[in-house]
Length: 284
Image 1 (cartoon, rainbow, N blue to C red):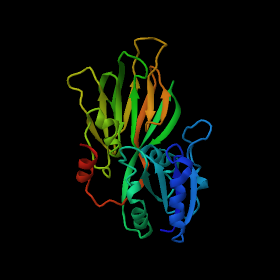
Image 2 (image 1 turned 30 degrees about the horizontal axis):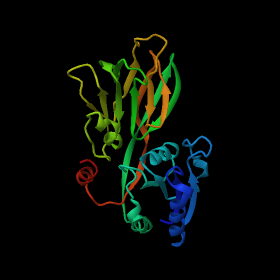
Image 3 (image 1 turned 135 degrees about the vertical axis):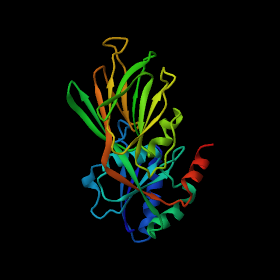
Image 4 (image 1 turned 90 degrees about the vertical axis):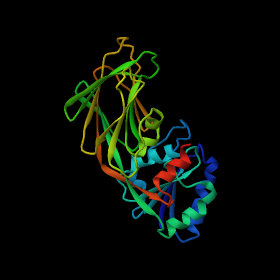
């Protein structure tokens, strides 16, 4: 590889020191490098990188920060034909697998094309209000419906491929990709899945039913979740969260359609350890 883009999170990469260090290393090996900061200096919030700003011929996008930085970069650039890899300055680092300690060694692997490529499936979440599409978003990790600031439980009606599955009463519902299976889904008691598999995991959160367990759906299924009536009419605070970053208020009658996305993401895997080894190291 010789053509790179770096997307850094300046909240974690102070003064963009790590980004400049990576840029200098790559340029010393005759690479073309462009650097972006995906944090707004005024609001301190993530900003979307315009795909048109990615130079033609870019082969790899390196994100610097944590898993959230990579998730946000992917959301805006999932149609750019290149591989993604994350340098971890965060905590867990399931997605951003390059550590600061082995940064140069990992960069050399990228330069030498010494890595595997994992195809990661994405979801498309479409929010429908009063029969009209309000928003449609690509998601790599998960779609989460939750009760927001309310103490009382909420109601969710789930259909799969047009058939009623169940009516859930509880704190919320998670629909995760295999990539997102290690995130909120896992914390809520859901199963782990190989990140390169193609399936959807639905996990109810604190459901008031003895038989409420996670359900795994295929890449061909379509889930439709309707927000049921709240106990406090016109005082609802329920929310739709997309990859833990974008949060949208939803009300009774709103519908969220969740289906596999046509686009997938290519993640560069530099570590030769197996999925089982990886889980054993990260989750103890």
